[in-house]
Image (tube, rainbow, N blue to C red):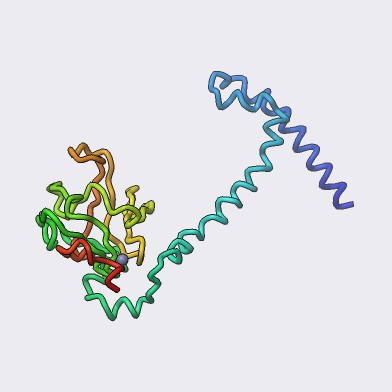
Length: 210
Ligand SMILES: [Zn+2]
């Protein structure tokens, strides 16, 4: 009884949908989009896949939190508070930003050495990746391979690419592309000095020390 009613509704809907395009679309038939429904039943058949794709994409959403589980260094918030000063915690663990032109490494230009993560000490940038951008934060045109991860950041209504330490997930800053800097990559890793700790010793920096 119920299914029969459903079938009647379904049939009448299909009938209506088949009839509608021909009458509705005539005046707009110049647009490519509007010519699509003239194949009538084919368009209808495609329609049920839309909820399926919706479900597929929404099931992917929790990956953002899974992403956080992929860092080898999984210290808790309390553990980070114990080893970082309040400013380091605000920037590394809460994605804060230091004021431009105030950072320790903003106009720091050594010829050798490594900038490690201030949180976990993983090596992130070499001295020769650094360049003068004039932006008010340390700028690097590249990182040590695999040392930083990129994430889409939509905060403040801007689409930016956030960079984090691949080992502990600490927030470093953002990466900008195609700005026209005369560097090999035309990328600018705009990093908070607070997120970094410079060492002159290229050989013993990072995880090998721990
Ligand atoms: Zn780190």
